[in-house]
Image 1 (spheres, rainbow, N blue to C red):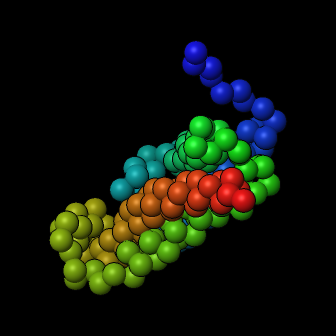
Image 2: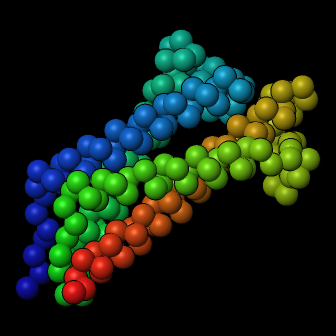
Image 3: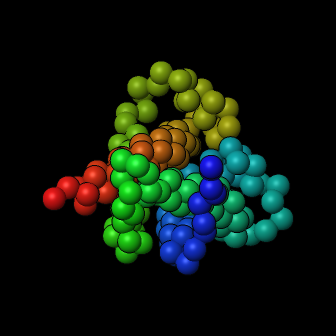
Length: 177
């Protein structure tokens, strides 16, 4: 008979840590990129109509975008650590938390690589959109910030998959004599 997994204190710690890390990454990320291209946020994210101060509006936007990703990361870690017939032993939460940095580091790396890519290499015609939104003089910064954001999402997803695989491998090694 199917039994739902129980949510315990260790799960609360896991979800709290993954969500906190996602929030810190997201808020820092958005404030750095808002410095590089305020137009990306004012026009691309429509914060020009937000009644709050610019930096406060960026923070609120970052929180709204980041906390669900932290919860999702916690769910992925929880599922990767769920006991099964092949892997009956779970990692203790302290060992599981060692893997939380993997998606963050991967997100930052891919974001930096995409952000540093030449703006003239433009297979998605981002420059045209950026020129319409930010003007020709600010278009390059807009494109770079746009790419940094894409890189963070893509890198975070790849890093989360990698972290889940690493958790499963660690658990597999635990079961071997």
